[in-house]
Structure formats: C-alpha cells, structure tokens
Image (cartoon, rainbow, N blue to C red; front, side, top):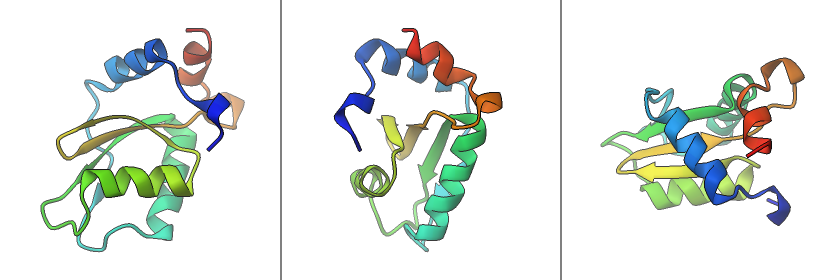
Length: 107
C-alpha cells in the first residue's frame, strides 16, 4: 500500500462514526483467510466502500493476523478494530459507488 493513500485522523474518525451503526457483513471462520475470501471482500467494498467484518470464535487467526493479511495483500485499509470486529475502507473505482470516499477526500 502506498503511503500517500493513508487516511488522516479526521478521516478515520468520520469513517468510524459512519460505521458505528453497521452490522458485520463478512466473517472469518475456521476456513481462515483465503484468496477467495479476499476477492469477495474487495467486491463488497467496491459497492459499499465501508464494511465491518468479525472473527468467529472458531477462527484460527486473531485480529492482528487478519489485519496484517488484509493490508499486506490488498489496498484495503483497516480503519478500526474493536474486539473481534474490524472496520474496513476502500474507495470505490466506479463513480456510481463513490458516496463515502467523496466526503472522506474533502475532510
């Protein structure tokens, strides 16, 4: 991930507030972290730009492993981790789906 693509504090705060009322859309279970799972995650973020995921009790990985895997293998940014829940952000490439990223850019 490029350094100039990192979010500033105010941008992260806006995204955390926006994600507060959201429910987790994806889970990490006993199958762990796979390329197929990452592909689904990227596709969901293309449509929504901001999602939550949670780690199930049966997951073989912890929150830090999951965060590192996502950030090392994609351009997705982990905005926040609370317990077993991660808030993920990635600006959409399709202009029709760019709702949150337009606001975040201007913060």
